[in-house]
Image (cartoon, rainbow, N blue to C red; front, side, top):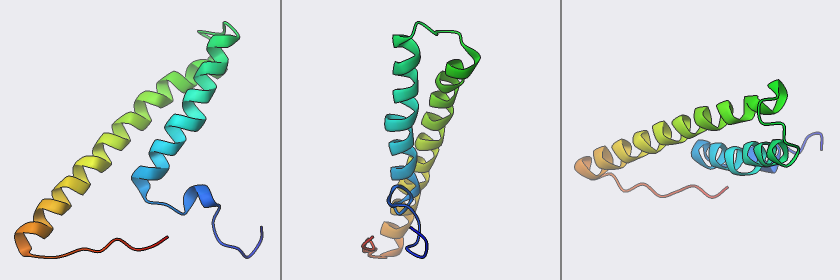
Length: 84
């Protein structure tokens, strides 16, 4: 909808968006490829590669968030999550 901001799927934190994309979009495409016996199709084969990439990004983001939480705790910063 024009003028209403970003789509709901992208109005979340980066780690939530990455996880959603991997679980819904990527795994759905992989399942579809497997059900069509298109294991090595260049179209569907991309998604298995993409799943690994998204998982690495999720792990990287989780690591950053853990480090930030540790730093905030050491500095005595109390962070309150923003409402979306």
